[in-house]
Image (cartoon, rainbow, N blue to C red; front, side, top):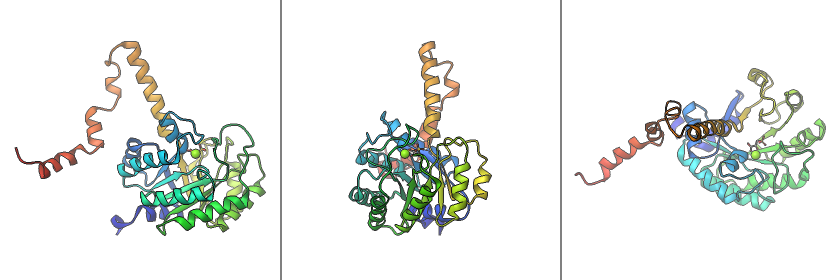
Length: 294
Ligand code: SPV
Ligand code: MG
């Protein structure tokens, strides 16, 4: 039954199914709960926003075990499958192996690794970032797949060729190599302000494996066009962190200026809402069951 489907199987189904799926960014337990409450069926644990929520840059400043700790809070906070942004895999094939084993232990349903070098730099910074050697990156993919302890664990290989200024041919060559190495899906990334190169890639890729996209920079393209192009999964990659930055800034500025809470009270979540979202009702029930009656 659906209630017994593992999170690994749920993510695999989202990515493998012919219908368009959506993963919404979260970066901690609270935002993970909000993604589930909104009705999404999966979470993108973004490296950019998980880092930023810790006050760090998207440059592997958080160690991989610190990322794992955040993922555990996110996983405990929801029943949704999580695709984690594994950056470059935190090193070579051997680091990928250990990372994948630890993800599987904690019920994290999948990982995306990108074909760059450790320490990574965010794709939207600078030009012509160096790419990993294709064969070396294929080793990372194989090592990751050989290390998964659940058959449904999903490994997405992310192609940075277009971002780094390489040709469409190079992007396709890399995607084909990563697919042959065992990747379950290909994330083709672009930083153009329109989706032209995404559509060209999708057409030439012709569904050899599911395609995942991240329309952060080409945000104005209508979603139905991705459906028609046969895209598997869209990642809304950073918008809860960005929304919270705006809300926190406005609220902090208003309180600072007014030396009063009067103007913010009506526009912030209530304290009761916090109790509800964190499941305080369950604790009260458990107290009745487990604490001696008074
Ligand atoms: C992230 O959310 O960390 C990503 C997507 O990797 S991007 O910022 O577009 O590289
Ligand atoms: Mg990232």
